[in-house]
Structures are given as C-alpha cells and as structure tokens.
Figure 1 (cartoon, rainbow, N blue to C red):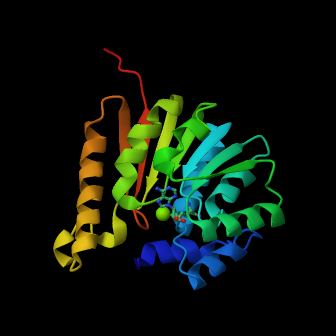
Figure 2: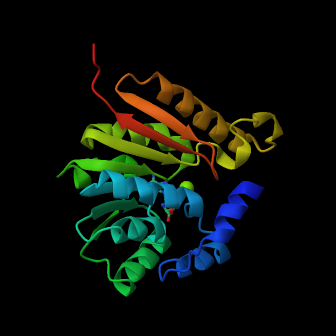
Length: 214
Ligand code: SAH
Ligand code: MG
C-alpha cells in the first residue's frame, strides 16, 4: 500500500545488500516476500532479542530466512515450505549465498511438519504462509516457543482488506480475510501472549509469550 511516510523512510535508506537482489527477483516473479520496512523491524527485534533458534512457516525463495540468519552467525533458522518450485529456488539460494549451515529447510506442509521441527525450542517464530491458516500454525507451534519467546505474524492487515472487508468482491478472498480478522481477535484474547499490532506495510502482529503475574 502506498504511504508517503513509509516511502520517505525507504528513500533515505539504502537497501542494496547482496541478499536484496532477490527482492527484485521476487517482485518480477510475484513471490510475496516480506515488505522492506517490516523486515527491517524484524531484524531489529532479532538484534535486540538475540534468538538462537528461529522457526519460519513459509520459506518461499529463502529471502526472509537468509536475512534472519545474516544478523549473526550463531543464529539457526528452521524454515518450512511445501511448494516444490519454491523449495528448489530456496535450496539454490541457500547455496549461492552460503547459508546451508545456518538454515535447514523442511520440505512439507506446515500443518504436518511438527514432528520434523520439534527437536528444539525456538526463541522466535515467524508465521508467513497461507493467511487463512495463521491461527492454526500459531496453535500448532506455540508450545515450541521458549519462555519469553516471540511469534511474529505477517500480513495481518492483508492488502487493507482486513479493516475494510466490504471492498472485497471475490468470495474466496472474503473467506480468507474473515479468517485473518478472526485470528487477530483471537490473538488479543490469548492470556499467555501479549500482542502488539503494527500498522506498517501489510500489517505485523508481534506476540510475546509471558507468564501471568497473578
Ligand atoms: N517468508 C517469505 C515469504 C513466504 S511467501 C519471505 O518473506 O521471504 C508464503 C510461502 O508459504 C509460499 O511459498 C507458500 O508456498 C508457502 N506456504 C503456504 N502455505 C503453506 C503450508 N501450509 N505449508 C508450507 N508452506 C506453505
Ligand atoms: Mg508475508
């Protein structure tokens, strides 16, 4: 979505790292990678939180997972992807950019990958796959989150449709948007998580797992 303040922030910064050559590839091939300022925020959270293990649901071409891993060599990323074409590209990219030791790719549907990733706990989980299923992913993987860990969910505003569902024509998109609305409302009800929504790009939900103090 166009926003002159965001455009301003984008304009004054350079984002021309080696990895970011993949952003133009993604735009050209319509791969929905995380928006730049959202990524910048997540990377800053990683610098602050210093997670050892990160779990990502929805790898695509490996763009976000490589950025996460690039913050520090001690970070290990587990990322899940079900689409064969994406899997091939991600593998190529992990090799080209030299992340094969830091990232493991689980080739599976994320709804069925629990047993492939439950060999460890994760300090951060990034949910960025099928938007209608974000809540299912959250529910399935939350017990692999370490104490004080954080779950970040991308696209919780989905093209501005989530706050304005009336403008959606397609029945399928409407169904999906309703699920995102339900997920957001469910998130704020969770007693073990405190969620902060960020109105930036396509919308981020940042949920921190907390012990109750009463
Ligand atoms: N996180 C990436 C972008 C992911 S795009 C980045 O920012 O660089 C979403 C990806 O999730 C797509 O490649 C899609 O194939 C994958 N996906 C969707 N539903 C999935 C599921 N149930 N299991 C595994 N992957 C899924
Ligand atoms: Mg996304």
